[in-house]
Image (cartoon, rainbow, N blue to C red; front, side, top):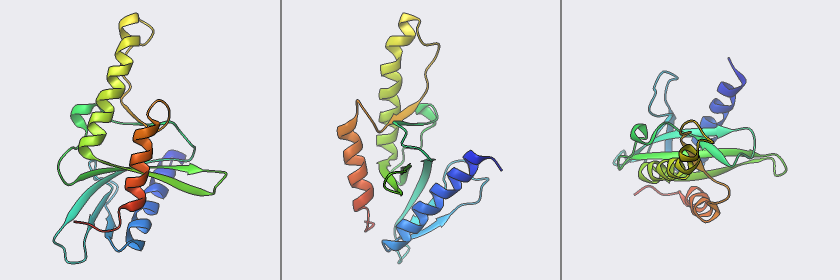
Length: 152
């Protein structure tokens, strides 16, 4: 198993653990489910969320994503990005709805289009940025992760 796969698994288990601690039933999917890493629900089973986790062992400023048309953006779709903060010895998390994730990927590709037009970049690299220049959005996404304790 590759180091990247282990980092991804650690991220999924961190998110499952954290959601469970908050009173949300969170179940990791099997490795062969391409769309979602976690299915979360309230204890009554009347609400659920499909969660895709992206994890990094470093304090990265962005997370690679699929092209915008492949980002799951339904009302029950969520993305959790976690990155390890070495100095704090903890994960930092960001929670986005599927719609927010899709919009963030579209924005990143739009910013890259300038370089593509100039010939300094060959193609789009879909990402969600959590560093500069999107610090305000990243702060909101981090707050959303920290406050997601109750499901609707």
